[in-house]
Image 1 (cartoon, rainbow, N blue to C red):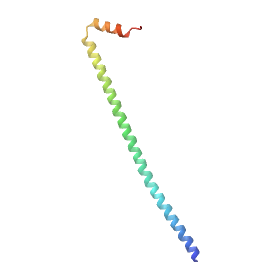
Image 2 (image 1 turned 180 degrees about the vertical axis):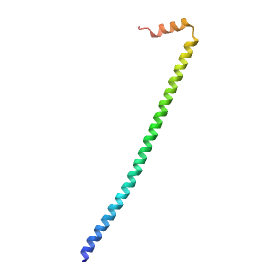
Image 3 (image 1 turned 135 degrees about the vertical axis):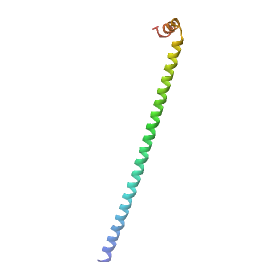
Image 4 (image 1 turned 90 degrees about the vertical axis):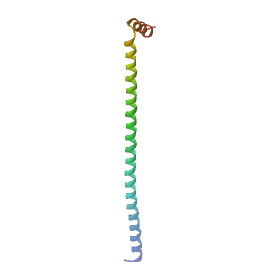
Length: 89
């Protein structure tokens, strides 16, 4: 082999090593990015589920409070309340 052939072969070897290192680094970076995205999505889903549960609990409590209020009112007071608030005007 001549000196030029060895120089060209050495250049291509360096390029191949650099490309391999880039590919490995890219692969690891992609894996970390996908893991971080999955964690963010999971956290978002948990927060959404908690918010939905809180809304549902609040709504159930308010409905129970209304039911309790209506139960404690005399029948005529309930009729008057419905007439004053729920009739079409």
